[in-house]
Amino acid sequence: MFRNVLMLLATLASVWFASPLIAQQTAPPATAPLQAPALAPASPAAPALASPIASPMAEASARTPVATGEHDLSPWAMFMGADIVVKAVMVGLALASVLTWTVGIFKFMELTYSTSRLKSALRTIGESRSLAEAQLALGHKGTVLSRLLAAALRENKMSAGISSDDGIKERAASSFTEIVRAEGRRVRAGMGALATIGAISPFVGLFGTVWGIMNSFIGISKSQTTNLAVVAPGIAEALLATAIGLVAAIPAVIIYNHFARVTRNYMEIVGRAQGASGRLLSRDLDRTHSSAHLRAAAE
Image (tube, rainbow, N blue to C red; front, side, top):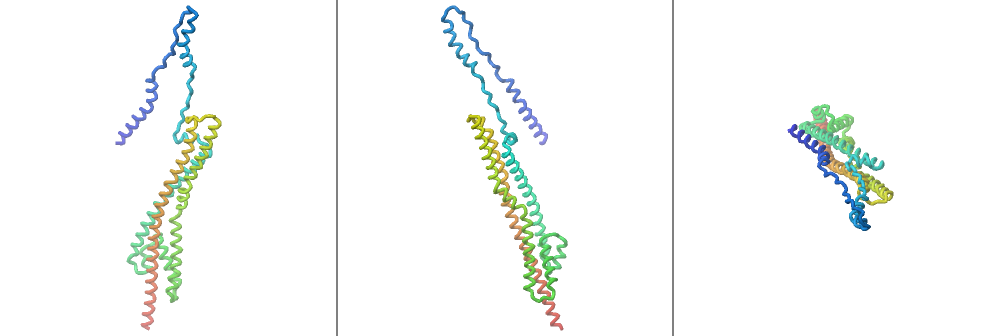
């Protein structure tokens, strides 16, 4: 299959390269200009008889063909022929497009990996009865759930000897909120760049188009002609800036909206992890007070 494709491409390339030669060989030969037959100066009326024949030929020979230059309107040729300001706009938009796809690929890998790890961690501690047991089951996995459990254990140890469970839960909830906010900032990194590119790229491209069309109109005024063949290349170069702006903006908007939904789903899972950590802390506190009550009753 791959060999057939290569043969087809080679055939098409040979036909494409040979087509100018074939057209040149099959072009009709240039006809020699007609010459008026020599008339004998037999009478004075001879010049008058030759004038109807000679006048069309003289007019044809007087007409000189006007050379119309063919412009290469490929994207690269239009970029190279554009004004320096339009070139700067195109390069900036191209870099913005590269940044968009880089952020999109990175965020896809990051969010997919973080979501799968957090779901696995929640399944791991599903049957745990205490914070210590849950942390032992997780091991040293660097997930947000590990940080939440560590914050709950630290607050429980630092509040040893305090009988107010509400105060302990409130301080633990404050630590949980800080951890969740930090996680939200981490997963939203790069989203602002996508939003900015999607919002301003069309206007940057429009600026390049306006600048290029302005230069085209200045060229029209200098050349004193409105021939479309003269005006079209400059306008096409200007419109290329708008096209590149749309190429940069449309993927940025789509990728931003997609990852906004994915990030929101991930933060919901983080909320579940926060709730699981809070429930484990509450069990530990109740278990501690139950053991204290049993010891007091035994004494």
